Image: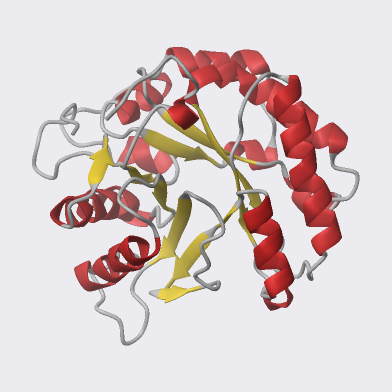
Length: 286
């Protein structure tokens, strides 16, 4: 893995980032015994096992730049925090007049400095296709990133079928914005387009009817995880950056599945950044 003095977005090669999606209460409740860190120590403990996290809290309330800086201080060099964009931008304004909310988000997230990872735009499931609004929003991210002297990668989770057109696919590719791949119950929720040099996958819930279920619900079975690894490998070369997050929090399933997926990725010959080794010590990273 290469390291440079540039942003973390440019400082690694062939790295698959694999992690449970959230580091909130489920993580604290399921921390490996006998380790049960105090709540303030959850992020530091989490970052000793994983090299990335997707911060969903920013969707509900945007923290200050100082809070982002405090998170940076509690994580090691090379750690990456993906940030979910505010619902004010995606659900209230529905991408209209994006300049102010995009600039506010990036100025705050600049507190992460080299720890800032991709920004996730998750659109509402009833938000019908509006390519013009999406194009203006992605342009605004480029402009605002330049204003804070940063490079930002954006992934877009589109959830209404009206978006699945060649026009939208080409629009995303033009901005090097990754279409967010997503899964629920073992089934892709969107077309498996490659629209960027890098990829982003969110796995929400395993155990679909007829799938190779893994108990307890909502864990993913090894075959389902293997299929997703195969899709990623078929779509991106070995030197592409891939971010994989698990959102099936209940019962600590996300922690189990992230580790299982990392093992599958290693067996497939992929370099995995900072995922825990099942059965190994909590601070063991590859």
